[in-house]
Image (cartoon, rainbow, N blue to C red; front, side):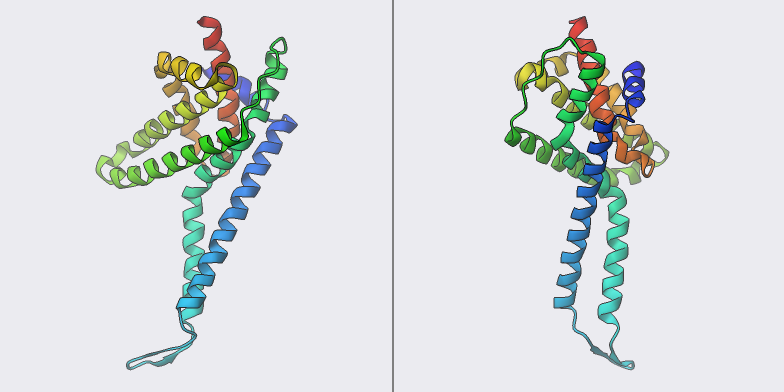
Length: 229
């Protein structure tokens, strides 16, 4: 598994890898900016320009305070939301990463059938929803596990990343049902490989590379397990 990761890391300078990273980050930033702009507009509609407070009088800076407060809130939330959002957007382009890996390391393979765009959309939306929901729940549970919170973070996200990225890599060659069967057969290895992907998620900037590294690593893992089978 470490060899799979190192081969993926060694190909990080591939132009197709970098294109997917930049697209995922750019689309994620655009979405976050759009969400903030919409939230700020709602604040402007709901909060009056001036209010009157007892013993204080007329106050004219409430709207500005709410706008700046919402900006700080969005910046804070982006630390947690950027990775799942980037992962969801990057999911649309993971075929590009898998193709680059196979062109370099498995040139004798025939071209993989393209995954239908609607299937890719459904998988990306489902992955994003599960990733956000589980991590929101985990945020509550972290308070009860104390110093073991990082281990819980790695275990939970390792399972999710391993499950989804292996499924995406394998279904290109085996179809959805074949990919699911192979994943269940090697669930332990896939979980450990997912934890290897989850560990850097806590590192700013580095975590934005994880969707691409994950797709490449699990493409290697899929081909290795297929040969062993």
